Length: 88
Image (cartoon, rainbow, N blue to C red):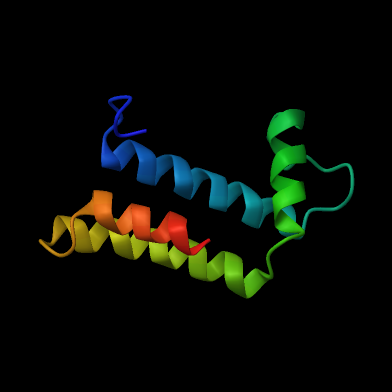
């Protein structure tokens, strides 16, 4: 994504969006798309079965921490996001 010209903020935002959708679908009733397009809801529901609620919460916290720490002068966001992805 970086080679394609996306900024680390865009990548972080996309990952956070995906985790948020997974969290929404984790407890959604069958047939409830939670206001998402059916395609996105189906993909998120599939991923939600692979993670516990605690794991989803931790993924979300990690992404928020990566974003804020990078802007506070901590580890560069590109490196932290790569580390996050490799840990999945």
